[in-house]
Amino acid sequence: MSKPLPLSVQLYSLRDMAASDGFVTVLQEIAKIGFPYVEFAGLHGKSAREMGRIIGDLGLKASSAHVPLFDPEKRGQIEEEAGTIGYTHLVGGFGAKDFESPEAIHAAAEKTNSAINHFGPKGYKVHLHNHEWEFNGPNKGDLLLELAPRACPQLDVYWVKVAGQNPADVIKRYGKRTHLIHIKDGPADPADRSLPMTAAGQGSVDIPGVVRASEYAAVEFLIIELDKCATDMLSAVRDSYNYMTQRGLASGNR
Image (cartoon, rainbow, N blue to C red):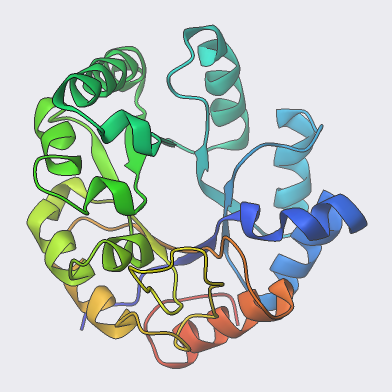
């Protein structure tokens, strides 16, 4: 195996802690754990300049951000935040209704290509984050990525498995188009998507297999994310970091 990829964390995972204790406290805890990177999903009222200073003082960098890619009125804000904080990976996604028909998928592809035409020449990569509805039937997520050939899939391995597919196979299928992977674990039960997730290594997703498959792709960051968890979320994020770094599956600052 080549040198372990750097580990990031989707800060949406700790949204409840941010609401109760403040976003800066969340970032401080992430830095203490040893994460070198974070993936944003909003700046919680901070300006881009403030946020860049805060994470810089904590020894953190931004790997990427989930942003309102498909809202033309937000494009200036997206560019200002990305340029100031210092990331080039922009992530968006679509809901289940966007995959209910070929017409809906074509409409999603048009939005995706419009975003790529705008952001691509400025040095940004446009990524599409998935849930299970992209992969739980033929000609859905695959059709979208065919119609938007310059889009990069941000593969969420948990939801790929919920859809009944092998995450490692999907990573290999998209190969060099894949730069970001969401590392997420849990029961991945297709019969009940509402079940809480677990720390990495404590569920049914073959995380080592996912990491091995990343060598066939162009992955730059492995990003921990939990949508919800039955245990303390910060502890689950910390346990995920320890699992990934102590087994040499990803690199951190500790």
